[in-house]
Length: 390
Figure 1: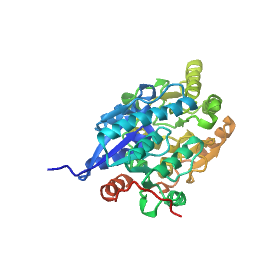
Figure 2 (figure 1 turned 135 degrees about the vertical axis):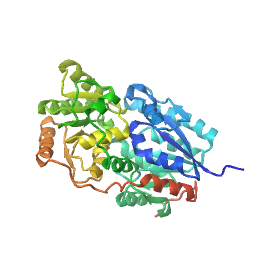
Figure 3 (figure 1 turned 180 degrees about the vertical axis):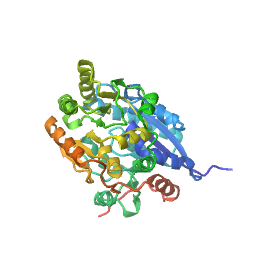
Figure 4 (figure 1 turned 60 degrees about the vertical axis):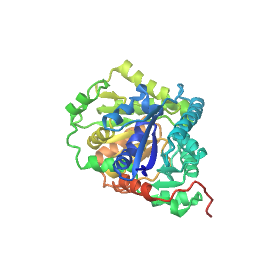
């Protein structure tokens, strides 16, 4: 008997992309009419960035192909060249596997390789998290992937409106919510397992030990590609603010964008010069464990979209620094500041003075996106031809 399941190829390129797509992967794998083909690529498969591919495999996923596409250097030139390598490698994989649909995730520079390769092979692209606004190169990538895609799984009405304004057919746009909110909803209802002993028995970090059963901050800051030459001083200001406040902090390693080496240099200098006992540095945490730690934190400081997206649902206070998330839809949990240690300190203190969590917002979804997306993938009419809709 012929296998009539639709073959869905998903390219996961980073720890953040995995968190954003995990519930979709699970729903596709469990769907009776779908077949999951999983590709790990870019920083996901690099030990330098925590080898999140191993986390996926521990979660029970089989990575069918791995793509080593990242050229070292963490600058705009290496980013562009890495995209080119990704197109070449992924084109070969898609040609061999011949999926019915390829899923492209969000706005990472690596994910445009997925959309380009699939489009030229006449494979419909399904884009998750299109129509949103953010700063840096990310917004250009996101909207470019939207134009290369045939299906759009967006987080909210605002995003759907923007996709329509880009000339996309109404019938191709589905408001599903963001899959990362699915994980946030799961953790919100059961994060009591996360305690200091669990964290340090499951993960190895560096420098001091932070007691997460008491007050602490999370620092998660990435370089801004259009400001990559300032990445070192920008991270210095953030770390100086947290150091001056003397509040224990968990610091996560930056992503692989241009300027990453300068951001991580600032972290290493702080660690090696001052040996701060109230700081602890992690390369990587599983998505659920990270969200459980986040639920216990008094505040997250930095420029990760987590502070805007997942924290809106969880109600976690967020100090968002700089332009990386410029224009993104926000809930009341976010205070925006510039790259000044004093501004950062004042914003953190404002959150601490308020105390507690903010009201949960469904701005980015209600926790059921994964199943919605899988169900749509199993039945939606597929088409590779596109026309601009006025």
